[in-house]
Amino acid sequence: MTKAAVLGAPINHSLSPTIHESAYRFLGWDWIYERHLVESGGLAKFITSHQGEFRGLSLTMPLKEEALGLLDSLTEMAKRTNSANTIVFDELGSHGFN
Image 1: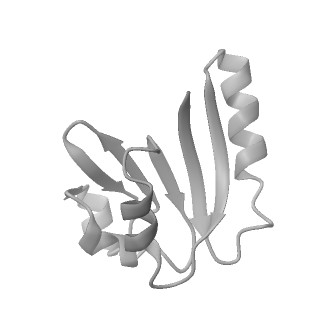
Image 2: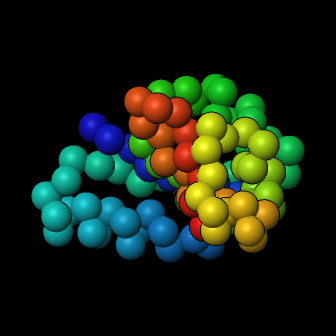
């Protein structure tokens, strides 16, 4: 099963799991989408402690800027905006998008 998640603080209000899991069911994908409370300063620890567990992460405040120094690559838009709201993990590493 493939996993993705939304991270941030606060996070309980996020509708992302409901929206994403509805799309996954519609598409017939065997994916799950979680939400995790990650406070400012906690992104590196979360990524390290969940190494290989997630295919992608959506970031809310306060993590968008924190992600920049943790990733293997950034899109030009992520560089220009000095923030990443999406991380994708693949065989080449971690990639930040905005």
